[in-house]
Length: 599
Image (tube, one colour):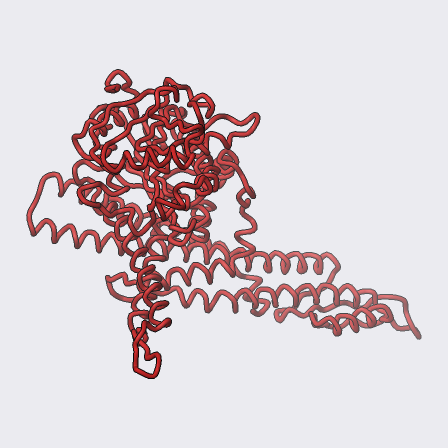
């Protein structure tokens, strides 16, 4: 970049452009919300039929366009702000060098060279003449300049060289910024169609990575999140960021923001939806490529031509099943988004998402905003739960996502006029095997700190969003109850107890304690229910395996809690719509304790 260009550069023009793209991003986000949360909801309430279904499908596709626009314009805004920051740093150095030159009675020429006047002691009757120098940045050349300055008879010569070197360094810095950002900005282009493909989302993720790698100066100027901060630290950090700084962090670090306990639900949801869309696109492309590279299924062994499965094919099949399973879970999450308004369902909030996280993948999905809810119920699933099955119904048994939905519907009936949020929390590596892994406390022990942090973050975000803590129930099914027990036991000296007003378990094999009080849980707010059929195997097996200390489980009267009636005919039937089991859960979740039917 030449001297005149940098001297006259107005970096504010880039910042104005960044503001424009940010405004477009915000408008796209608002349009997406309008389509998904208002227009589609009203259509479902008042209309039905194949034509409406087709229209809703088109609206969903349009919402994808707006989401993609939101993400890409957010990246563009950050890129332009980062470019402005890099150029402004160079321009500030140039302006300072020019000001110092003028203060030294030097003249900066239009090409960036510096002219100095005659000066110094006369030699043979003559004053050392003036001249013009050009700056250098090469270390060897700068060393030669310093040597020349020491022996030059004109004192202005050394001053001119110093200013010229600074000007040249500033111009080189600006040139490097221009050369760095020009190709990055050229890459930030989308297809000229209205179809957002898997490749488009993969490209968006690459765009984000490219901009993030180049935006160090701009991002470093924003206060970084606290390292290993607790939810209160995270909330305080977020509170003091400007709107632009928050947008930049969501654009550049969506996975980190989406996983940060204590932040508002809407910020985490926005970040995680981006991660979901980009990851889904990436996995779809991987699966498509994998399907084109299937190796031979069998190979010959032995002289008689016996056949056996090829190891390459078995490895290929495992990769294919893993990708298909995780994509199935992602589709289940998207399906929940698409059903907002169906049967009165509120907006969904994706509070955590990582398909490869914690062994089985991480999914935290809320029905309704927990930050503004009067009543929040956090459901912790048990053995065999993973991202591939989280939306899968089994023999008329509701899926883990549907369980939270059914609890939300019933709870909303019991709390008219109040906001309710129910959350499916799969943020731990649940055991995969009933007979071996589920008999160990290891999985619960590892997951306990994560659940503690989430509940603490939920309370913190609610306090910031609503000015109160609200009423929270944590509900564990099967091994999920064991995890809750370990969570209560992780509380250290001086720390506040588990951030829940009520603890409720169903089909519990044990909570690693003899009594509720041993976990710091008020027996008046400890609730348990047991089902029939396969549930008897789980509860008995828990006693046998020792998940309940001294063979004690929560449905024993000696445990010290409330034992609720249940009509669940098997281990997964506690959430069937219209069931007594579900009504009892909803009564506890909404604080209507007088409505609970006890054993």
